[in-house]
Length: 64
Image 1: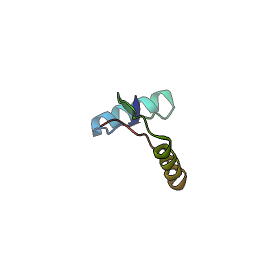
Image 2 (image 1 turned 180 degrees about the horizontal axis):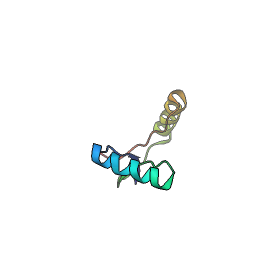
Image 3 (image 1 turned 60 degrees about the horizontal axis):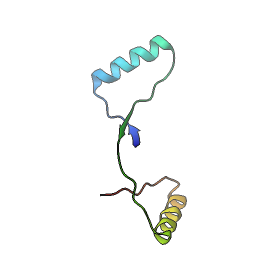
Image 4 (image 1 turned 90 degrees about the vertical axis):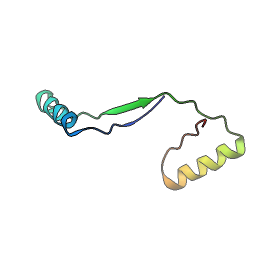
């Protein structure tokens, strides 16, 4: 499973903002998706890791 920040409607944002005000705490909204990660060769994994370090991000290989 992988999660990312949710895309919210204006109405959703209003409701979240109201709750944040009420509980006095910021909230982050995430949407999660079931995915299957790909199995990589050692060479492919090494290339992914090199790019992750270069770009300072995390990459996830998935089955298409």
